[in-house]
Length: 293
Image 1 (cartoon, rainbow, N blue to C red):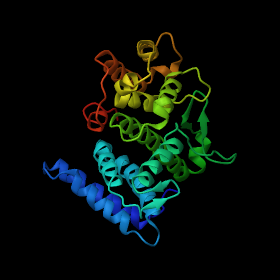
Image 2: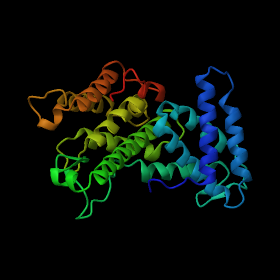
Image 3: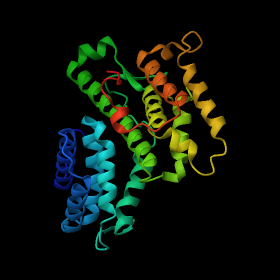
Image 4: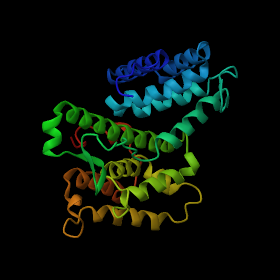
């Protein structure tokens, strides 16, 4: 819930990631292994609550910090992966002991939290309503604004947060796959999310799902297409290209396709596929000179 104070473990992990990222930005050559060692130690020493809570809190800290510093995603995932590999058998949760506890917890977080844009519940008497053509957009009537401007502004911020949360989760999943940290269902979940996000005719399509799909193509498209058993590589590549091109054909699609943010993200993903494809780092995915504000 918005406004809730994070668990002390989550705050400690977030502070560690903040220090690691600012250190890298400052050009310090300190290996991320130092931060991984510290994270592993914090986790193994967690007593009340247990190390399992620390693992969960760390994943939440990665997601939380990435919302404001998305370029740090790769660094945080590498630190987490290295820390997990140092977990002693005393570190445990419902998914196992030692390294398995951390890596399997990450897997199930990705399965459950990085499975498309979720949005917020819209009770009958709430302010605003969902746009029919884009379930990640909320619309307001003049009466909504006149009746409760503060609530209207609050709803806008909450929906921005939901969209950001999903796009960051999509980036985390794609970079986990590319960095070979965690490949959920051998990439089948990512492939399904990409295909769904590019399918504008799907009933539950949204611009947030589309942007997430573009991020995943750029973040791990090459690794996805190169994975063992991907015999349909050329067909899938051409399918993605064709789908992305359709978002540039404004005279052939619905009016919603003319949104510049959609057009621009389609162009970035299409350029990637035409040039390789190649897996872009989180630093590239969220570079300020390429991101649309």
